Amino acid sequence: MGFEINGKTYETDEEGYLVNLAEWDEEAAKYLAIEEKVEMTESHWEVINFLREYYNDYQIAPAVRVLTKAIGKKLGPEKGNSKYLYELFPYGPAKQACKIAGLPKPTGCI
Amino acid sequence: MTESTGGIEMEEDMSGTVKKFAFINRKAPYGTIYALESLEVVLISAAFDQDVSLVFADDGVYQLKKGQATKAVGMKNFSPTYRALEGYDIEKLYVEKSSMEARGLTTDDLIVDVEVLDSAEMAALLEEQDVVLSF
Image (cartoon, rainbow over all chains, first blue to last red; front, top):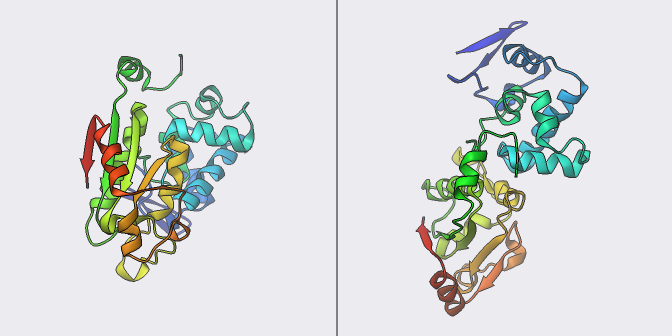
């Protein structure tokens, strides 16, 4: 499975997550966001970029609880809470934001 | 405690039973799947708010070695993930002293802060666990 933008193809797994993280770019993120019915704003990009950095540092997609805490630490308590993250990504920050960021599904995502 | 995550009910059900879990890691990080599988189970266990300790003994000490270059063997270097454990509130990492010394390593060679235990201290630690899982 996969999709194509401007001649570049992106491979996805059966749940729509990018198979190859290195293929990710902003165009892919925009496409994945439309698929998830998420309208990307600056606040959304902030979380997506945070996730990319987290993955780069630790080689895993964080569990929601861990993501929430880490965002709070870096971007402030008004953003490091479930309410804020679920407003941006109503079907779950772990599921939707990780998918848009081109990360694998978080380990321990229950 | 109210939290708008899918996991609340489960967390509430389990809130009364906190057990002491020790995960013993004895194998080199690559060549077998044990080290990576253990790490995944540990990360999942963090969702259940249990009292988790990680033990590294024998070749398992190599899992924490700095500077793992895995490109040539075609494996993902997952060692940076041990540094994420703190964020998962898993902060009890123990290394068996003689295993570390026999491999010419010191705590300076390791990517995370650990507590070094001799065999008697290790035995005492494992004695007080409810569940011991060996990888």
